[in-house]
Every structure is written in structure tokens, then in C-alpha cells.
Length: 462
Image 1 (cartoon, rainbow, N blue to C red):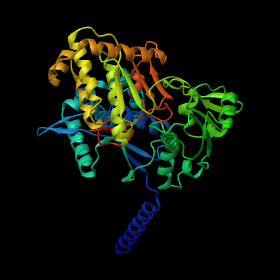
Image 2: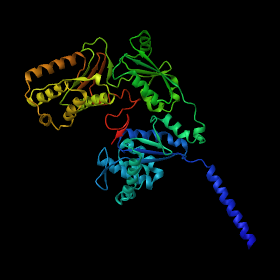
Image 3: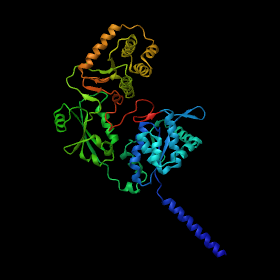
Image 4: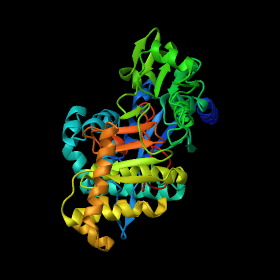
């Protein structure tokens, strides 16, 4: 018996040592913790980017999606984009907990359609089970943990990403994210076979401007978008610029010409539908921006002009967005002059126009609240009352607005409800003012930058 016991003991020790050895040599599975708001467009974009490549790791990378909310009362929460977003947060928590293997399928569908029932059905997820998990308070308990983590880590904006418990501060682009994951797990099959980064040669054809559309901003954005890129900036008015414009049939700037090897980058799939193939290169004419570089057009020199219809909420919002961006980038020297355009006859509208006109005399930081009140006011009457306006000389104001309308017409605005002119050469002409809200977008390639809050560009901040 002693001999058998001794043998069993030795076998147990050997087994334990083998298990310890295997544990020690096993490569840890990389973990990505992505903190988002379920309806934040930047968070959704980050999810879609990660979903686009995580399958290449053959289940060797784990993605946890966690949620950013704000405390309300003792046990309640609010979310930046309203109760619907909070409700979706809870349901996504339930899906991750109960149907983890189907969560990515659901998420890819929901981010496109925002239709929960449709996406639950497509992913083959039991809706009753998910609803019951939420109703029972179990999803809320997990959200409590997410909230405590965001508080402990100081996370205030969506998306925020941690890779292996370390905060990721790089670009939210496929090439950057893949290499960040692989830096901690170089022996993974996908990482070991990852090709060297492609150096994309980009020619940025500009109008030689030096205001908020400075080419440095575009260059920086391209550097974030591509893991490696070399950007050559060329003024369209130079001999070299004219040759480039003729070669690629470019009539408006900015425009970007990419070298043929752009097809080898992980980001190419995102932009290929925008690009035209010309002489072996890929061109983004960027003509859907509502941006045009104008030559020999009359306007006031050395000023930023915003042409705004105060009866149009989108037009006012575009104005607000420009001023917020100027403040964010500390571009006080580019203080815009707001020119009221449109047709106004009643006293209320003329009083509101006068209030906005007077805001031109205020510093940029004091100009913003005036336009914010105009944007949020349910009517021009409510805006007038909140601003306590005095008497207005309607005839003088109507004459001034008529002059603005004539100037706008001479500049070729057509029926646009909002326009922007900078230093006599840069012009935003958006028949749909919603385009102008993303005035710093420059191109869908680069992505919108945050307009408000404590986040960085490309985040929703609570």
C-alpha cells in the first residue's frame, strides 16, 4: 500500500508540474476593452473597425464592449444620447452575457440599422431571454460594474480602448489597432504573418490657404488614417500644381492623389468607393464636401464670412459648429462675421436678426452663447424674449440683409441656406446645411472631429 501511495503521490506531483509548465508557456489571449455609448457615432465606428479585423485572429483576441453612462440619483443612470441609448446599452450587456458567440453578428447589424428586433432575429438570439435578463436587473448590475470602472479609470468619452489593461491612445484605424494588439502577442499566427506597413505616397493639392483649413490638419489626419504615409503638399496655382490638376482632371481643391500601393493597406476597404483610378493612382476629388476654392471672386478681404438663415435650424447649427471648432482650436484670430441672409418682414424676425448681428461685436467666446440660444430656442419669439432685445430700426436692418443677399448671390451661393467664405478664397456652399455641420470633416476618409465636450476629436464626451 505504501508503494502504491508513493507512486500515486509522484504521479500527482508530475501532473501538477506539467500543468504548471503548460500554464507558464501558454501565450495569454490579448484582451480589448472598448468603452462606448451605444449610439455614439464614433463608438459605433470603432466597433465596426474592430469587428472588421478581429476575425483574422481566429478567436485568439477577446473583445469586451463596456458602456459609458452618467449617474442619476442613487441607483439610476443617464446616457448622453437619451433613454433609448441607455436601454440599448442594457440589452447589449444582456446579449454579451447570454449569447456571447452571437454578439458580434448582432452588433454589426444594429450599428447599421439601429433595429434591435431585426438584428436579434438575424443573429438567432432569443429576444425573450434578453428582455428577461434586462428586466431582472442583472444587466443593470453589470452596468454598475462598467460605471465603476469608467470612474476608476477616468473614462469620460466614447470610444476609449484598453488593450491588455493598458490605455490605447493611437489612431482608431485598422492598421494601428492590429499592430497594437500584435505588439503584446507577436507569436499569434496572424501577427507573425503580418506584412510590413505600406508607405502610402499622398499628394495633397491645395489652394495655398493658411486659415482653419490649413493643410497641416489634413496631413495629421492622413497620418492617423494610414499606419504609414508620406504627404507632399502642392499649391494648385503653382506650375507643378497646374500639371497635377490637368493630369487628374482636378477642378476644385482640396484633392488628394494616392499612390497605387494604397490598395495594400488595411484602410483601403474604407475609402475605395470614393476613389477614382487615374493613370495608376487613386484620386479623391473630395467634391462632396461642399467646399470650393474660388478664384477672382469679389468679397471682403482677410475675413471669415458666415452667411446664415436664422429661420433655418441646420443653418444656425452649422454656424455654431464653426465657432465651436474655432474655439477648440484656439483660432480666435479667425473670428467670423455672421451675415444674415433670407427674407424677413415681421418685427420678431428682424429683432432676432439684429441680436445675431450685434453678436458680431462680441468676442468669440461670447458670440457662441448667442447663437446657441438661437439654435435651442423653440421659436424666434422665444429667442427674442430670452435676449431682452431693445428696439430695432427695421428699415435699416432690411437694407443690410438685402445687401448680404446680393453679396451671397454674387458669390454664386444659389439656393444654399448656409455658406462660408475665408480670406476671399475658401468657400463652403452647402445646399444641405447639414454638410456644413461637419465642416472640419474635410472628407469621410478623415472622419468627423468632436464639436463639444471633454473628449478628443472623434469622441462623444459625457
